[in-house]
Length: 147
Length: 316
Image 1 (cartoon, rainbow over the protein chains, first blue to last red):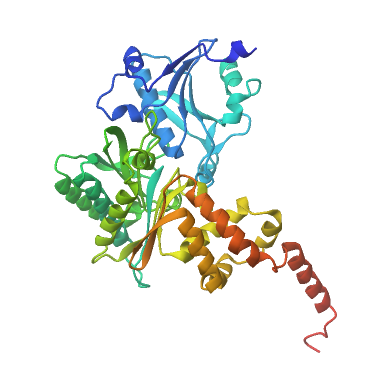
Image 2 (tube, one colour):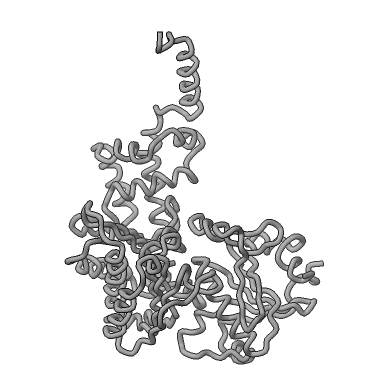
């Protein structure tokens, strides 16, 4: 079951040769830092942009927005947009994980989902904690690979 | 990790809200100039957002985007735009000055954010300064701490000194500057790398909140009925508490005085956690020893009320 749900291919977007291969070369030397960490392909051919959040959530959202736009405009398939990480107590006023649906929602705006829009396509941002990523049966990889 | 600046009024006199916005711009400019003059930050553009600083977050661009070609002129242009905004609209804005960081050869995109929207400011403070991570470097504070050849304390001191110098003729002053992993959360000592504040009282208040998460059950049970300001006020000038605070500081942090304020600096990532642990053991825990638990206070309240039912009728 593990092999069915883990990503088939994983692109490290920190690597300039990988970005070039995907058709998103850097516009200037600092731009790669605005790009998310990974672009992954699952067994069902679904593809996800992933940001492993280490700092503030709004920066993670910005990086996902920039990366999704770059990948989509370069004709790469994007099915999911994902943050992996936990929400800081102060930021939890405006970011929350939706129960069982894993969407990143805004509790201050009637639980409105955060969504990225590029040329009339819209992706709702998903969020998984590291525990949920590691739990293959109920976690992120299962959810994404069966989606 | 970022740098977060909190401003407060210099006096008790109320300041017109538009002037407070211009003060935020002033201190952001002082911080940008500090990094710009060291060729560490190169601003590239200014965007004014209504609500939040991106469409994905629910924000909307307002005003005219400014592409930076001559920073002083472009900043004057920004101030002109600010003066043209209706006050009500201005107070919903987040002004982002984007640019490129070069921290000892590490090139990162980043921003200075002037947070006029109060709900955004409640989280990200008056001014947020940060960079997007790349590879081993997580963000701005990480870059300063990891790559400054041991002189990150020098960078922090010089930035604080620049903000101090920028106070002349301003109606607000920086009351707190946080250098943290992620957004500063009251009580999260492990996220702190440095804090510039009004001194002992501010830091003890910050540590007090840590007890909600980290304190032993016996102490947590006593926090409920206790007023934080009262408790901190009761211990902050006690000679024994001061002596133990100073001892804990000497063993954990580096300190720099700036007239009426102080910068506390962590030489290693664990410093603030160690400070809290030492202060908890030597001051908080003994100070709470004789205080009542929440359930005992509640019991006393109930007993008081029950006793009152037996009092003579007030009208008789």
